[in-house]
Length: 71
Image 1 (tube, rainbow, N blue to C red):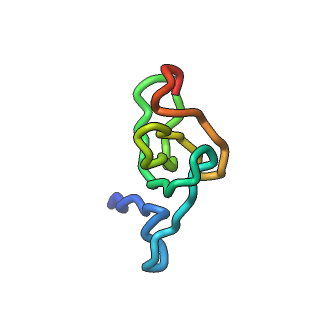
Image 2: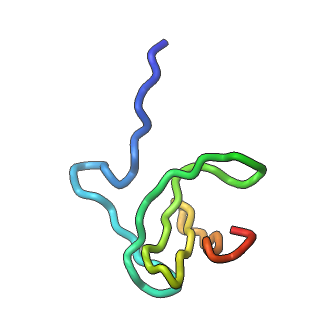
C-alpha cells in the first residue's frame, strides 16, 4: 500500500488559513509536532511573537507557551 503525503491545513483551497494569538493578538503559524515522549503530537498553531510563543491546538485549545517548561 502506497503512503500518502500528509495534508497540511494551512494549504487547503489555495489560501492559507490564519489565526490570531489569544494572548498577544499577533498572527500564528501552523506547524506539525512529532511525539517523542508522553506529550501530544499533531498539528498545532504557534505564535510568531518571540516574547509570547503561545501554542494552540487545531481545535482552539490554549496549550501553554514554548517559553514554559511544561509546554
